[in-house]
Amino acid sequence: MNSPNQTPRSILMLSLHGYVSAEPELGKPDTGGQVVYVLELAKRFSRLGYQVDLVTRQFEDQPEYDEVNEGFRVWRIPFGGQDFIRKEDMHDHLSDFVTNALSSIRNRGRQYGFVYSHYWDAGWGGQKIAEELGIPHIHTPHSLGWWKKHNMGEEMSEEDMEREYRFEERIRTEFLIYRTCDHIIATTQHQTEIIQEHYDVLDRHTTVVPPGMDENRFSPVRQEEVDDLRSRYELGEFDVLALGRMAENKGYDLLIKALPTLFELKPEARLIAGIGGEDNEQDSGGVSSLKELAAELDVNDKIVWKGYIPDDDLANYYRAASVFSLSSRYEPFGMVAIEAMACGTPAIITVHGGLADLIDYGTQALFADPYRPIEFGTMLATPMLYPKLADELAIEGSRFARRTFGWTGIAKRILGIFDRVRAAKYDQEARM
Image 1: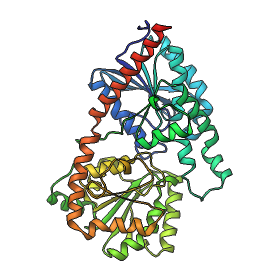
Image 2: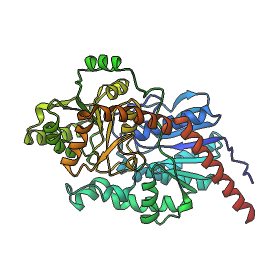
Image 3: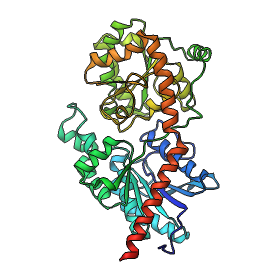
Image 4: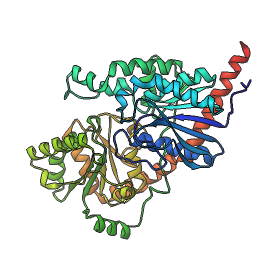
């Protein structure tokens, strides 16, 4: 049963916060893994014959459209003024977004078969839009307010945490989204378990599809090329790489506390800290705190503070490192670790996230608890101490990452879910 305003092979994707564009400025506030995720999926959807409008917020001096290809464009809807808005504060302006988006969609005669929203801000807006258009709404959370709140550590008081992250409002809104949307695509099994237990969602209402990565961009190279890259980027044979935006949940302080153990076991080792966004004052303050901690632990002289690593250099940094570290307190998935593994670099990942549930420990990667610094430091040193293990992790980790997380295969799996959700929705309507 098809409604006349539905075009099954046309998708309205929503990702509202950060700087979303055809060429995203990764490292800017709220602009990281989620932006890569939605862009790569949209590109693959269009490659597979779908028309995709990726709708985001228009602010500062951004144009209305980025025409990516014949089947995919980024479409910016203005709301909330001209200035950047943190994702934690986006909810204050979402009613205006829904009004402006629906007005633009109807005035331009746009027709969609699905709404596919990302994160709770877009999820709230996506549900309203889908209800008005009479089409299915599929949602990917990316992270969960309940889990993040309960894994922030004790560094902030309850009052400060609520003021900064607005968890009460977020969790309440997430509950409504998850209970009313047509389907949830989670990125890990652990996420689905939390959604079912703490948001009262039925098992059949969720499906796990892991994130993807660009297997053409993130690939291993021969040892001769690795040596050349280490020379070009001034990395050593026993350097640990950690990179990402500066955020409490990333656990960089826990990593620094693990360094004395690493340096005791492998004195030649160093940490290459690609931490923080580009020209971001808040990130700079966080990095300053990390440097103070490193000074207290007397390890600062063995840390190279690289700051933001440009996207064009990212794959080469992965390849040049001896080990990649993911020390997060909370990490819904950890795409940077998958990218590093795809490049042939042994990865030490956190147990506090979904990726640890998927890997074959000791063959594809190693994991440890970053809250136990001796344990985490020992795991960082282990591939350096045992070259045969390092070779095993490099080869099998790359195979695992590339075969499991290529974007085209991920996109096909998600489109299959869309079709099943649509068929179930209209079968139900036909019986009413």
